[in-house]
Image (cartoon, rainbow, N blue to C red):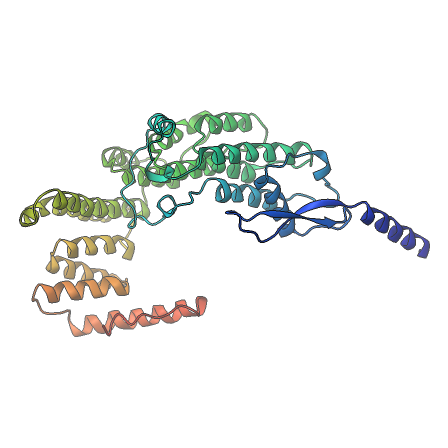
Length: 422
């Protein structure tokens, strides 16, 4: 036994002398941080995080994948490690260096529009600055990221003997969708669909629809929704909600209502749920506020009061949508259904109706957020009306305090903003 241990230690010592240089992170002034080499023994097993970081370094440095990097017995690849490497590629290659192209909040950026990829290619060639999600992106880095992602996906299967499943297939498809490589995306999905195990499923296509909608490629997202049958997939209520949200994001309410009417057909496979109506209610309110603001900017200030009809009409559609949800028994309105309506009514200075919806919301057992509660109180005070009843205020404030204590158990560092006392 001692002889075997001595033999193993001797082999390890010999291999440590002939160790290869592997990649690790190091601090530098480079934009994405540069990387250096570190001497590591081939028989020294790498942790999950170290393996992911070193492979990410190789991808960022545009190093070629070879058989020397594939040491399966010592550094086995798992589904989680492969997914983490694929998820890191958009972060290093696809994001813009400017904040304009990296805003995720809907309220802090211009309304999303359907993108014309051909026009964007011509503008990029002519030196015209792009706008929207593709603003300030480097096309060469995007193409490099797509190439390295496909190379890694093939290398980890061929050289390392890793068997891809539906999870890794979904992550690879998401990388192609975030890189706006539509042709490569469909070619990849058709190749994966030929394999056994149904690697392309409804969840994968739903994630693709969501990403394409966020990228402003709503027509491509709608095409992906209708091409589910090619992959023997049936859209569920989540897929319908995703494509409806993508259509509403660019203002295509006509097609969104068409899909909703299909879901409302008696006996349909996936009837709408509460979230389906909440999507439409929220976007109706957001679209109405944007429409009113655009028209008020274009005309003179004294004409702004005559432009509220556009806001009122859209809010009425949101209210009608919520009432229709109740009548059809497709769900019960919650705070997520009432909040956008109350905000839109306050913006339209319809304080009485906003108060009525707040009372109805509390009577149904939902507690508004601090901002919504303060907004209604300020709107009533601005209109010169009496405030909310004392019993209602006490009930709301108690509910807000209880919710704050519950959240503090999960987020103890959260700072409480005393909106009520203000």
